[in-house]
Image (cartoon, rainbow over all chains, first blue to last red):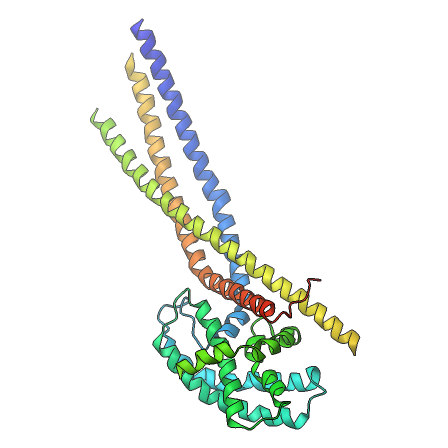
Length: 218
Length: 64
Length: 72
């Protein structure tokens, strides 16, 4: 009786071991033949997405005047000054042409063309203030809201600066918003300027509260 | 007997390592799921931006 | 009588150990791949977070200025 029982138990043990073995080999085949190719394909797809959305990254970096550091950990945020001063007025000039040609044909051309130069100057002065702010707080991963706030601040600083520097007509405010809004309208894409632009005019006319916030900084 | 004990010891060590690796894998897969959700949101936002911009341009063209 | 089963079991055990070792290696490779992909996708995650925040702020501003139009 005991011998028979032991034999049965041994058979069961061997069967269990064989099933464990086959399960392990099944897992191995599954991982090596199914999962890893999918993961590599996913990696390639994400590489494509990264490549095709690099313009978005550039755009956010330039609009927030910050260098993202996740790519290489060695890059510091202090290298930002050179490209930004060169790139900032280009954006404004492009959008100035765009708005004068397409969006605001009714506005006075002289106002817009004269508005183009001062905003770049005030943009330069604002950029220094902005950069001091940027130096104090490092960019961390969850500072996207900070960036949003800073973008808004830059546009409002230009707005305020421009109002204070040049005695402006009532029609100039439209031009100001037309010139300062590209900072905000650019990020979705350069071509959507018209849609967001119309809406952001109201956005810029409104925020007296954030100008208050701005005067705190200064 | 000695051989069997050695085999079981090796098996235990390997299974421990395998478990650690699988924990790491689960963590990475969770990160990947979050990221793919984020990327889906990004794609939705970009697509809606494109659709809206297309619409706006059509309106602009029809106005002119 | 126990000897043949013992032999077979030890053989199967050896195979199991070998399989676990292979499985470990492949899981290590999988982990490396996943880590590579995830570190690459950190940027994309940041992009999408910024896009989402931008969209939310635009949404809020449009609602605040009551210029939000109906969807198409």
